[in-house]
Image 1 (tube, rainbow, N blue to C red):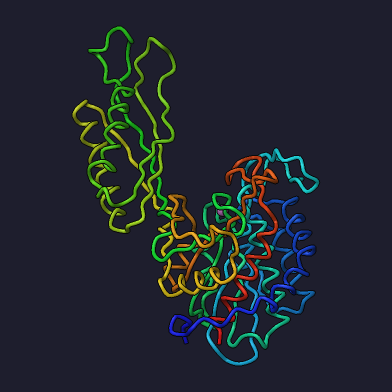
Image 2: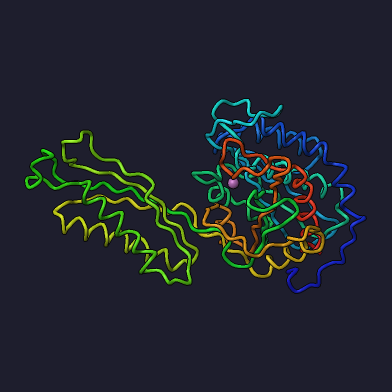
Length: 403
Ligand code: NI
């Protein structure tokens, strides 16, 4: 049943593409409507409503209210066959938009600064295309509109709600518009694409006192300075130089006056890695270091460590399906980019742990149009030409997999 054992279908550019190009104005309009009304995780009510309303108008079977605001649309091909899922995230970020465009965010302090408005539009119009061309594929396509990717994570509750069951999903694909790649390119690779994302918070308890009488104190600032330094030895000395990992202390708060030795210091940080084995090694070393440094200075500590998202690991076969589809029609010299890993995290990883699949990056930057700001920037925006390319890749993956 799996496409990996099949030869890719011949690419006929006179098919599919003109139909998708004709959808472009409606696609852009929908994306801009979503962009104007961004909503934070698990509060995507207007977004979800708009998606459901379109699916309803188009006569596409769908279920709403999954994991609060999630939706699953089901589209059946003309004959029985495998089940492919396509996943899109719908949430926005707590950022004040600084773009001066007619479709700028109308929700104060909330912005689609990561392109999830585009993901939703691509997935919705992929549903529209497939529903109008059931003769082009066998089996079933499930389109999963997911809440809260930016945190605390909508993928896991959707899986727990059974979105990969009945009919059981054989494979899943998904994309992220990517301003780190130029428009017309696709970043896809087998194996690790994005890193596991974990966090920690640590309170170091010393003993406060007079800034000029240190011998009576345990200086929590000095202890935490040693901790911050020593934590960097994890990546330098406990991780193979051939592996990738990051330990970042992003917050450090201590002290209130220049002549007072602070009794407590609080720090928090993030840990990223690809290799699941590091998921055991890094937290263990982190605690050993904090514990050892604190003990040697007579301080105590409290440590809270949590795992947010596992690494995004692509299945070799499905990644090859996406790569072969993309390489057949991406026309720029850069083409398909295999070196596209990032230490960013994504809860698509939970879907990829449950079923084989592939997450890929769809190049969306266009510096000529000043559309190249990084993701999560208040001036982030992308070239909307990418939307149609996204639909075409999805549709061609469906045709190749579902036959
Ligand atoms: Ni994102």
